Image (tube, rainbow, N blue to C red):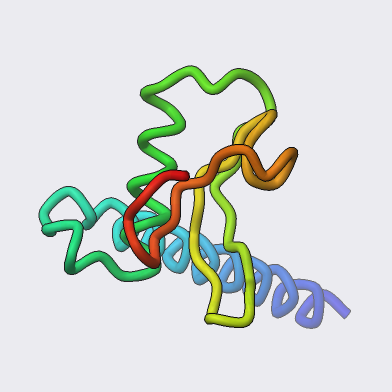
Length: 100
């Protein structure tokens, strides 16, 4: 029985290490936006850009970086209380780079 527990512990450690590497890789990919022109942004670039914007500017409580699906394919946005997801009053779209 000891061997089985030891094998399980090793599996759990390897799974945790793999998860950490994955999260670190995704985080690094999202931070790459800083070295790109906005015209070259891809999905992860918008996630990083909006997350940094959210940290730098006080939008109050409830701000999120999220994907908004739609018939045209959707977009990544930074939403906050009283904005896109809350009242449709304001949104920043990664599809056309504008705020409305």
